[in-house]
Image (cartoon, rainbow, N blue to C red; front, side, top):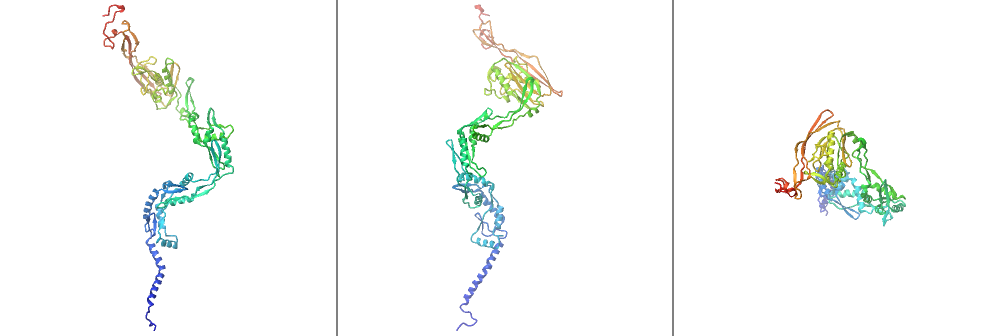
Length: 611
């Protein structure tokens, strides 16, 4: 008998289980979207689940939190060099070399945009994938694209077999063809992307730059034509000339210097040139002879003390690149010679206009001293006169002879000659320059300028005006003055065999100079130095040096200026006495003097001795 109607049979539980499974399966399409919606809602304003930035899971983070993580990652990225393979070379590329910068804000915006706004299905499918495989976010890292081309060119030059359009080889002084050949170049756009991704990746891994094979541009017959021209260039030496100046480049120099540049679409020929380093090697030792410094404009004093301004001249120089080009051009003509390309060099520091502005218009002071001809001291007088001729002192400036001339030395053109040192006459380099100092001092004195420093001689010399002499040594004493006028001062020197003259030109406002020298005062007789000599007859002394009286004088100078005001100065000049040296028999030397014997002098002709 079958089951009763209305009672569940054994198949009822199985039916229920199947029903529940089918119900669950029917609900899945509803539960997954619901879960996605809930999860998406819980991450509003935050990054989606399953997103990584570098080593860090940034799912659920806010923008500021992502920026912090990005900043930490950027520190590591910018500190770690990227290993780059270029052909067979392994290079380390510091990110700073490409100006790499990490944009933390841009990275945060990219993180929050991930999984949003790409379309419903794309956003949903991405969410599903991230449950099993997290999405790795690439940070926003910027590089300076302008730094890439020179870097690629450097790497190509050092590590890549570049295509070659042909050129010229030089060996054993002869030219031969260097044929064209295929090569490779860095694929610029792809390589830029590889570097950008490599710099942004963490942890870092090496990247390899892609290369493209290229065939160089070569114009038909370009290499053959270049070999012919190179053979002509290497034919013989080349000479460049300008007036009396000449520069010769030997055949072996041409062979060392000759270079070729392969053809290109812009220049279809093989370009020949000379290496400027080789040209400069030969040119450098001759520059001093071939080039000229600028010459300043200068005053010239003509007959009758007329002033003329001689204009200055620009310097001349040789630019190595232009010399190399001129050599190459000359090597291609039958004469194998050409012009030396002298360039205009530096301008003179002192121009005619600058000299005119100084208003040096007339002679305002002069003085001459005389001396015997042809002594070593005269050479020193002439030397210091040459050094001071043409010196210009601008308004308000101070001029010092020692500051200009420096120490008197053989290198500076001075010779040994007698001079006074600590009151004694001795030979020293530059002896005699005090005569020039006296001459200069008097010219300035009479012109009415402000004398700042001057020291008279220890002893008076008759060749100088009393009270108006000056001495000179290194580093002191000195002769110095201030140009206290509104115009420049020109010092001009002239000399002959027996005299030296200093002329001072300027515009002193027609100053009037009056001076006077007092009578000699405080007369001091010369001391006597006895030189004992037993062979000297007692009745007769022999004077070796006559000595000289000492005295004091006062020199007063009154300068009347253009406005009628007066400047008066009074200087005391003391001349020391010069010792009289006498050779005498010891018996004649007074008691207390060195050499006094105390013995009685013998009588003349064998007579009785003196009492």
